[in-house]
Amino acid sequence: MYVDTSTDMHRNMTVSDKTQIISALRTEFDQWEGILAGLSEAQITAPSLDANWSIKDVMAHLWAWQQRSIARMEAAVQHHEPVFPEWPTEFDPEAEGQPDDLNAWLYKTNREKPWSQVYAEWKAGFLHLIELGEAVPEQALLDTGKYTWLAEYPLALVLTASREHHEEHREWVLG
Image (cartoon, rainbow, N blue to C red):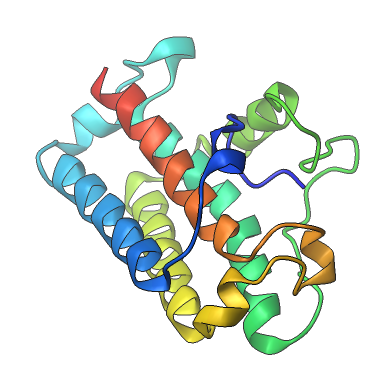
């Protein structure tokens, strides 16, 4: 299972405390909010990062991948299989490694969205992910193999991988 991050670091992480996991997500959200609050819209939308990406493009990228995490968490809360966003079938978001072609498609798909929409979607998605994490009982979050669609991974990994993905891109933005 590919869990929305380009590193394998999450596989070595021990996830053993729901409160810690949710707290780390909230801290990551707050860090992003602090960064974004200190920037003008012109700074956020300027293509100032590698590959001519803007901070807005990074936020749209994070939101797009966040949708897969939300689908997994909603599936756990609502007791069904995940319903993932519809992406072109030529891309396999479950493939390990750097999904460059998929990320390029996500960039192209979202690059014309106005900053206000990108920000609203990202913020609502992140807060919803936290709410879903809070809604899952700790044991269900931490048990390995509880959800067949996660194979041998605990559901908590979905949350920690999303936080790590945000952290990775926050470090990129801050340079």
